[in-house]
Image 1 (cartoon, protein in one colour):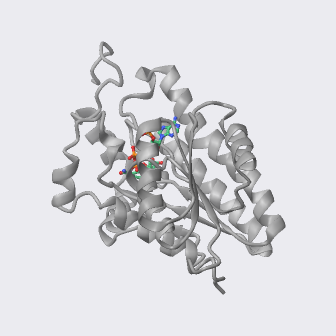
Image 2: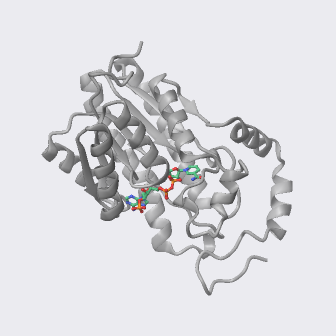
Length: 279
Ligand SMILES: NC(=O)c1ccc[n+]([C@@H]2O[C@H](COP(=O)([O-])OP(=O)(O)OC[C@H]3O[C@@H](n4cnc5c(N)ncnc54)[C@H](OP(=O)(O)O)[C@@H]3O)[C@@H](O)[C@H]2O)c1
């Protein structure tokens, strides 16, 4: 049964959202603020984070604490927990959303970028979830939302680090969900398909056109679907019928076909300038 806080009523508490200064994370923060949640917003760029805080305070009158922390640092979770404790924020909802994307063969990847991705997508959300699971378990309420991806179900060439880390999040969320359910704490895995956000900024993808054509989903629609699923205590949310059909198609596609397409695919470009083109 949903609590008043679940419904976003007067008893709404606080939520911590990572990667909250743009895209899906910002839309999740907007939706939670509209439901009355106080917010701790974490991202690594001060300016857009401050702008988000000003907007949400002004529009919804909730307390918003922006924390500028690079979540790709190995000690990021510890830093976040320390700052949350210093603020005295009583977090009821943890949203592990921060992420980034690069394309290219794994062998061509910049090791520093690969390490940042593994830390940002695996280490930091695991340790944040570990810390907040303990707190929520003690309170016997709350939610943890992981933002994974449909690429966690089907592995494609060109996004090896990305899809493997998103798969980790999917598995971690499933186990944690079983562990926390007896204590009344919910864990949901949100797995979006292509969504029109800054994630594709470095790739040159025509994001706005793709959104208009319906090839990419709107970040707000994804955020709303994810939060609806979380408050309904569902295990997994794959937003959009088109996304679910695309995933089904991907799952039905034989590996042989994927490997054939990969050999001739123009999209598998080197991750860094100066590295070789795929053969
Ligand atoms: N867009 C899609 O098609 C899609 C599909 C499936 C899953 N997802 C997932 O959805 C999540 C949100 O991505 P998005 O699409 O909304 O893209 P986005 O607009 O680029 O948002 C990513 C957020 O993560 C933050 N972030 C990145 N690196 C960080 C770091 N080292 N430390 C702290 N914050 C960091 C970014 O902050 P800065 O801007 O300050 O770096 C930004 O706020 C990601 O986990 C992504 O993998 C997206």
